[in-house]
Structure formats: C-alpha cells, structure tokens
Length: 452
Image (cartoon, helix red, strand yellow):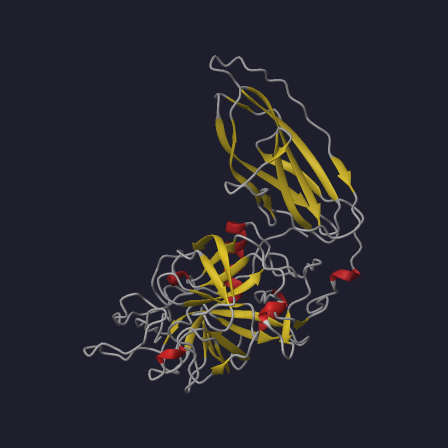
C-alpha cells in the first residue's frame, strides 16, 4: 500500500507563503505543467466553498470531486480562472461518500447541478472494457486549478495541465512524479485518458499524496459509479451497464475529443466530439428496438392497505428493456406526476428504481402509476391502488389491478426530469500533521446498474 501525506493548502484566492514555524512548505498546484488554453478541458470545474478544489463534469447534471473537499458547494465554476469564472452554475445538492480526511479509495463525492449543462462536451468516467487502461505506464493528462509554485501565488485558481503516466495501482492509482504531479487546490481533479477513437475519459480523481512534483494517489473512476448512480438516480455511464458490460444508449456519443481553434466560452466552447462509440461492442445505432420496456411495482403492490390517515412510504419498482435499455422510470400519484422537494418531476434512471418519501394523506383509495420509457421513446405503464384506512379501520379496501399500456415513440426522448496534498485549500492555511493514507484495500469495482 502507498503512504499518503496530507498537508494544508493555500486558501482560495490567497497567497501561499508558509508560516515561519511550518515543518513542511506550502504545496503548489499542478507541478510541472502549463496553463490551459481557452476552452481546453471545458468539463473541468472549480469548487470554491471553504477552499479551492477541482471537479469534473461527467454528465450534464453531475460533477464528481473529492469527499475531503466537503459538501457546502452552492455552485461550480467554469472557465480557466476560478477567480474570474466565465460561468457559474448553481448546485442542487452535494453528497460525499466518506467523511474520512485521508488518502483513500473512498475519497469521492458528487454535486448534482440545479440545471443541466448541455452546451459543453462532457468527459464520462472510465468503465467496462476501457478500465483495462488503469495499469502502470498508461499516459494520462492531469488538470486542476491549484497553484503551480510556491513563488507564484497569483497562479492560484488558474487552470493548469500536464502530461504524465500511471506509476502504481493497488486500491488507488499512483500518477505522476519526478517533478510532475497534482498538489493543493487540485483535490478532486481529474486524470484523463484518451481512447483509440480520440475521445477522453475520467480515469481517476485526486485524493492525496507526496506533492511538490511527487506522485499523487487518485481514486479509480470505476469505483465511484455505483454509489453516485444509486444516490442520484442519474445514469453517468451511457455506454455500459452496471456490471461493466456493453450496453450503449443514444447518449453514448458526443464525448470531448479536442477544443476547436479559437473557441470561446460565449459560444459554448465548441469542441470536436466522438461519434457513436463502438469501443466495447456495436454502437447504439446498430440496435433496433420497437418494443416497449416492462415495468412493475415491487413495493407497495396493488391492494396494499395502510392503517393510518396519512402515510409516507417508499416506492420500489422494477423495469427492463430488451432493446436499447430503460431511460427512466417516473411515478404519478392520483393522476399527478410525483415531484421532488424542489418541484421537479421525480425520475430514476438506474436500478433499483425507487422513489423516497412518497406521501398520501386522505383516507380511501389512491392510484399509483409507473411509467417506464426506453431510449427510443417507447413506454409502458403499470398501476396499483393502495388504501388508507380511516381512524376506525373501516376504509374502503377495494382493489384494482390496473392494465399495462404501451406507447411506441419514434426517437430518443428529451430528458424532462425537469499534497503533499489532500490537495484542497483549507481556510487556516496551516500544515496538518502527516497521516497515513489508504484506509482499506479496494479493488476495481465494476458495477451493477441498468438491466439490459
């Protein structure tokens, strides 16, 4: 196992001189790199709440970063200068997998954005057959917003990049060294790998390491997928099923290849993007799907009775599609779409399909309806009637099995679901004691998700 050293970093937007009594110098950012050009790596974002960190847009609504950067991020910043971003997108919520402040394969988190970013080419996580690229010697590009040298504090918040390689892999991925590597302010930032079709994937996420140009430990991207998809209900691997098998959808294309010369943020940073991917099997364009998906209630089921005048419960559903796959499942209650607490139509894109905190109040019967939609627009519905008994338990317990209906669409539907580092900046700018990193040994996890 690797030993990870974590040091405090410069606060966001503040010069990085170390206190006179510091044992170790303040770390810098991408060491041995160079500033990124306008619109290069447009999916790389800055997170500034409580200190500077870096993240990656892996889905129009999802940014992945390091858990030790915290969750109090009200927005993510796009552009080449986090001090003067070209775009600021608010977050809906942020959640971290672990509260450990340690170099670890558990050091990952995500933010769901309040609005999708649809004009920037995303860089999805590495998974499936492509995960074989996580091996010693694979060349990678690392990107981040950290400072680059102790003597250039004005570089804090400026996007930098460097080309290096994987130097070790146990449960985390060792990347860089010999004067090139991520450092403070780069926490949560990406290591990108380029595939044979020219497109890029997120290979790993900065956790921590030696710093000052030494190798740094990254969380392998395949490890983060299952938890993020389960917690968010968003499919962030549009080319693969959860077990890593090839299951392309119409979203399995359009990934970042290169920025066009002269591209500007005002134009959405036009980029060369990949076509329908055939990396691990036939592209989605070779699939034919004229049949609707299947959908059914698992809990509650038709005829269930609740002995209360008001009840809150979770809905669990199952859905599958023999063709291109289930795009999403939606829930309606008494004829109206079930909404999230923020007023958006609730939808789950990945199994297990569930809706939490569903509430009905009036006594009597209530109609629950599920709608499953595949990536070609075909849909099916299923219904169940539940009953809330009155105070005396004399509610009407009549049941209705409901009939499944189908609808065949003509095309993919729109999504209307409405360092030494631990390389983050802390507000005190004081070095932390050295800690041993890597708690536990985690192998590469290839994940269960969508049924195909």
